[in-house]
Image: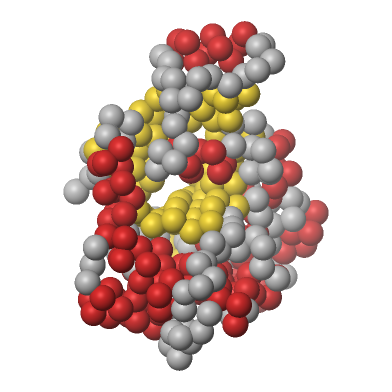
Length: 347
């Protein structure tokens, strides 16, 4: 099976063009270079692949284009140029009726503002998209109760949004988007309006749900700590351009630009970098004190940090020796974590 669930190819969004106008790649480049004051480039020639079952985080500062990009992915915003395919379906060629069907049945969306209907109960809010689909009352309430239980809101079905905390309201929003059993899930800064403790709780909830559901998730945030906690891969945007794509460890250990490095400077490196990131080539003659998996996080190796004279053998998933980690290298990562130094690998 093709692992690409949603493919974005050379997508542009140029604000200031007539509504819905499409241009060629050459025209998009020319318009961008024209310097016309009425044109603003929101997305600049972006290409990405979203893999099945992964959590793909798009991050950047306000105005970087991340929300515009995710809205282009579902055609809530019309791209000016490029191609977007979802499971082989050309979304830019889809009719309005086809798009409505895809969004209703195969896509889920959660935004920063919960947009719950205040006159409906929790159960009715969660069941609302199923009602729009034409699902009968018995079936839609059954499915709504299932996702309400999934997000740990059982017992609150008859409450109204005003009777819930911010975190509970966001859980209702998540449950509502899951009620349609989406294949791909778009979440645009869903936790940014929440207090820090509730935000962390919701991050844990998302990780729990993803471990159960294995959805393809596109998650938007401006918070690098949130990104590295949730992401399988991260794309960092600036001025509508994708600057770097990689796993949290790849981005932390080898930032592509100073702009990316600025995002990673205060990241908890000992929790992100693994033995693989700092290992040296394997030497069978080296004195070793133990063996660790290549994906073991540096923070878990702190007990070896002061033994500079000995090494740990680093093994891959099949138990093959692939490198060595010295206690001094572990200490360097732990000691320099506050100063934005990644202690990047030597292998």
